[in-house]
Amino acid sequence: MDSRAKTSAFDAWKKGARELSDRQELITNASRDELRKALIELDTLFRNAPGSVHKAYRNLTEKRIEEARESFAGSIGDGHLSWSLSDETPELAASMMGGLIREIDRVLAERRSRWPIAPSEWHVEQLGCWFIPRQGVSALRPARRLQAYSKRGLLFHRILPSVIQGYPVHVVDTRTLHTTASDASKWKMGACLFKALELKPEFFSVAGDKRFRIARVEAPSAEDAIAEQIAEALKENCIAAVWPELTVSPELREKIVGFIRDRDVTDELEAPEILIPGTWHEETDHGTVNRARIYDGYGEERLSYDKIAPYADEGWGMENITAGDRICVLATEGALIGVAICLDFCDVCQTPFSELDVDVMLVPSMGNDRTMQGHQTTAAQVEVRFGTRSFVVQHPTETTFTDHRIGTILPLLKEPNAISPRELGQKTVWAAYKWLS
Image (cartoon, rainbow, N blue to C red; front, side, top):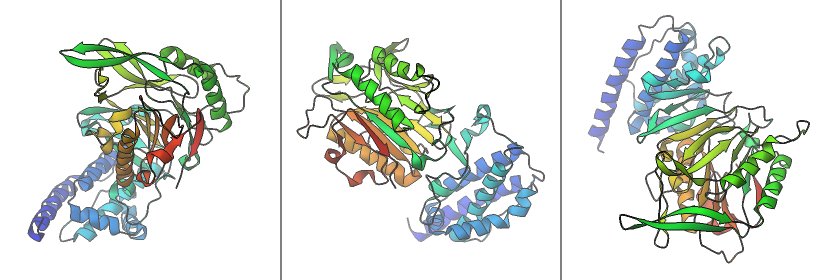
């Protein structure tokens, strides 16, 4: 883009900003809902800013943004939304808008005791978004220079679109009293695998196209494994435990959940806040789905998520499933957590998860090293854009690894591509992974 085109884009954006400021200036004693609407509108405006503004924001120090924020403290505190853009450069526009957004974000958080926003109010349908209060400045996203607006624009709230790439976003409040829940930097994630597990697919043809579904699995030591896995998850104080895609039958899933539900009430060990006992091919009124059921630390099902992108290869053909039609997010005290299944979170296809601003992605998967490389690529993309950390628990398809691993785990890495899939191998049925800086 040449300099004239850049100037034209910036001027057009400033024109839209002035129109918004004229409307907001009419607000003289802003209520909670008016401030929330104003913040959502300003966030949308900034995200749609030309590249020159976003580049300028990346270069701003936190001190500069805080100084701009403080300049609005009096007016915003009094409920006046008075601001304007005229002859500012991209740098000055980024600083001023960034400070304005931060101050409204702060005021809404500071007045939360008077102006609570209940989970039933998170979905702001008329503005096409979810507006989710956070418990405080996330330990996962320490704001600093050279970060994009998408990482540090707001500190006390998260704004998610209602729809991403045509998929509705569904957010579920999943808050418990887990001692590590409020500080995800102390989290441990449990990866649960099975030895000598063998998939038993059934094959058929649809319009001449070979299809498959998993009828059952054989895993002779599965029950012993899940007893060990749950015991270790409690001992390690894990916040989540995840099993791979298509490895946990409904019967085995009930046993996993039963271990949590039937615990002694006097047991001082804490159950994981989130359990994802793999996925399974389930029959519904709309056909077969590849479904993950997500449970809380009490063994209660919080939501279910259906895989969007079917698996396919030359040997088995295509996975015979009806594609899922929504994106699911769990809102815990410490983080927003997205759930995807295998190819949904892979660079081999366009994925809505590359646009989902969450702190953590949990991904049950099945595949080979190329599949894991795809996960690593997507994980790197969302880390750069949002600061998201990804936890992928993958069982091999028909591959037998010469290094004796029984699965491959992508832990919560800041640089997911910095290590080879071979080095991500796990040779035991259980391992806990810490949050890594």
